[in-house]
Amino acid sequence: MAQQGTLYIISSPSGAGKSSLLNALLTKHNGAGKMQLSVSHTTRATRPGEEHGVHYHFVQVEKFKELIERGDFLEWAEVFGNYYGTSRAAIEACLAQGIDVFLDIDWQGARQIRELMPTKSIFILPPSREELERRLIGRGQDSAEVIKGRMEKAIAEMVHYDEYDYVIINEDFEQALFQLRAIIECQRLELRQQQQAQQNLLKQLLAE
Ligand code: 5GP
Image 1 (cartoon, rainbow, N blue to C red):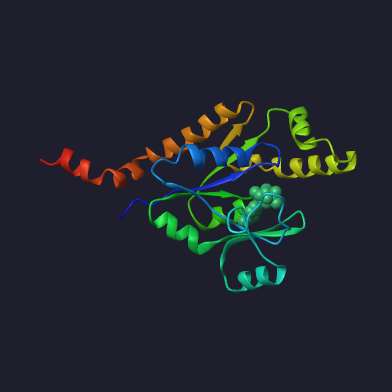
Image 2 (spheres, rainbow, N blue to C red; image 1 turned 135 degrees about the vertical axis):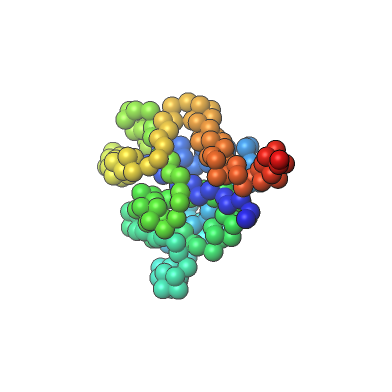
């Protein structure tokens, strides 16, 4: 049997640096092309710089509901007023080819996927409340009310950190990236993974 890829779930509040970490992981440390980020569907509006099919598949609510009906999603959730969903086919195809797949999804999606298949889940936290607030203030163009709303959303996500297998505190970016890579490296060295990856070597070493 070919080696199965691992399904990683990565969640965090906005402002914890999850997207930058995933971006660095997949662009700088994906030498063998064995890692892929899953592109979700969403009904939210496109933000400046986002591309259809790259950051998300942007769809209308009717289309999203049609995809739910067809059973195309492994999981879907309403996150702060918009629908988000992970499509099944692409993920299963990647895993079967031995590619590790990364899902950038919220705690609700994480709960659903854990019920369906084996996963390794990672929660990324900011180093302090003050730093999170500083990151959420961004360019300083938003009202106090808007920032308060973002903090409330961040806390609503963070309270679920203890449902995850691993927790990374993103204080120093390079350190957090190193820790993320360490989790992936450990997973690849697990007995069952190595038994599949090193089949030929093991056969040769253990021959009488
Ligand atoms: P944003 O709109 O800022 O890109 O994402 C908002 C939240 O939705 C983030 O916490 C993100 O992880 C989550 N999210 C993105 N895609 C999916 C998905 O396919 N399923 C679920 N459950 N959450 C998602």
